[in-house]
Length: 509
Image 1 (cartoon, one colour):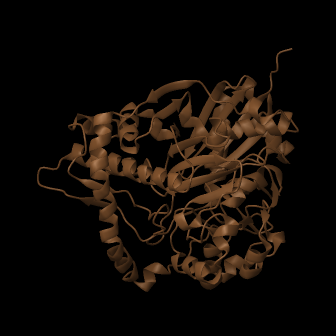
Image 2 (cartoon, helix red, strand yellow; image 1 turned 135 degrees about the vertical axis):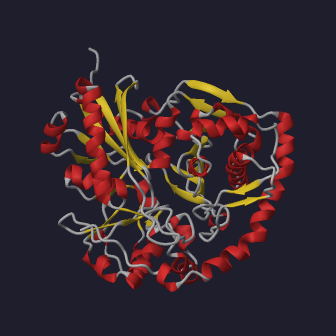
């Protein structure tokens, strides 16, 4: 008998919520997305109201029902993927006393440095040293600057799990996304009681932990009826977006590597054991599947830098890429530091900023756009070197995310990174497709290897030997530029007026 069950993957991204419907043969049946803005209430700050995610989900569900009502009526499981590290304060009533503080928010730099001095064991236990992106530093900041909101919150949640609560009424998260809070003891795959005691946080305020492929709730009957789904739909534990992307392309075994070209960028390698290297600013977190971990170099700016440059020059993305491609092959004279949101790997510097260096009166739009593409490539090369320096060789990299749509950029990146890049079919759906796979595992209990196979290869982009040599010659200048400017970044940050660095939070009530 033909299996007619379908699976829904939902990815709560930084700038949009995406949904995909997948059948039992893992064919993509329908996709939908809904955008929402990021609020920047002060320098280095990034926030979002959780209401935006729910509104986007309603839009996505309505679109999927319009596109494929029959498939939606056969959904057996929902998988959730989400932007990692965001801190949502939620009262028992479901209200949030303030907007969520997102992954790219740098306000807690001082608190993160204090934590690293006070808790020298933190990186080894939690997979990475304290940074402004993670919850310990954010909680310290809130305790000092917005204690009322922190005290009002009965639960601390990640973005996707705030939606889970609205979908099911359950306070649950998966171990991968929990890794991104920096409250998880990675080796034990459980909340770190020593760290919770240091922060004054009770376990009761944290969600219950499950693996990403386990059951993590049941869809409320009222929502199932409203959206045209059957009753009893299982909600899987799900995952943080990067690991969900790994599940989507079958990167689940030792040494499987890929990079993401989304709002941010990451270089990711699956491992069968927990291997922390906090001294290299390398993340070592629990994977979306049980008994697996990963190493990851994380860059806070990815394809979003191209979007920024296109808007700055009044071009569409397509026009910007076309102009860049017309430039002569090889490095242009302009160097771009892609640190628009600060940087994690390898610098751990939330004060770093984007820089265009080497402009002349002859510099045109094409040269600037090419410099932006090259700068992102250099940051990915640096990330690859950090991972390999930690003892994990990378022979080739799969690629996922919206940036993979450009064949030109992928050819360029292959030569800058000096590794073949493999693009799989439907690679831009990444985390949402991986979330749908986790939903299937939670429903069926099938072996991971059966479900998490690699999709068909769309194209392989090999490095151009001539360009590899030329970009290898230009790469040291990129690295030296940051080292030269780092003291100025720190000095500029110290000169921000107090009224800007401690602005009053926006309420969502």
